[in-house]
Image (cartoon, rainbow, N blue to C red; front, side, top):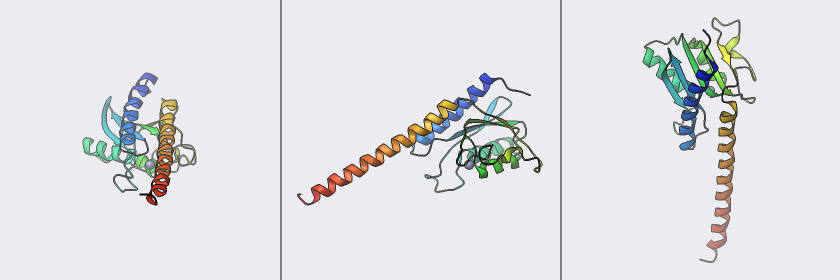
Length: 173
Ligand SMILES: [Zn+2]
């Protein structure tokens, strides 16, 4: 069953909202929602720093929540919306969960495993293949990331300058 483009945009905006929650606590803004029969049943945003966990990617958090909600490890009939192309770990989990479809905001040429480096979602050797929909809110998803890193560099530069000043004053005070 195909889903109209405006619906993809509607749910991707919810994933973007999750990503903004990540940015608000200083995490790289990546967000995800999982939709089943028109309802959001799983939400997640990147919390790798705050959780001190390699596993705390947005997609894994959303999958965990959706599994709990459906009472099943299988997420058949579900569509995932994620602001950045999933990595190898999350792509593996998506195949394991048998998610039907993944809608991707921005591609990730450095780590993406939904077509950029590998396409783990559509390997015919596995027992499950995932439909991929690209180019939904792409500009917004990638701008969010570039803005975040630009602001972070600016803050670090600010701290560097502040440290220089405090060193300079230490001798005189
Ligand atoms: Zn991941």
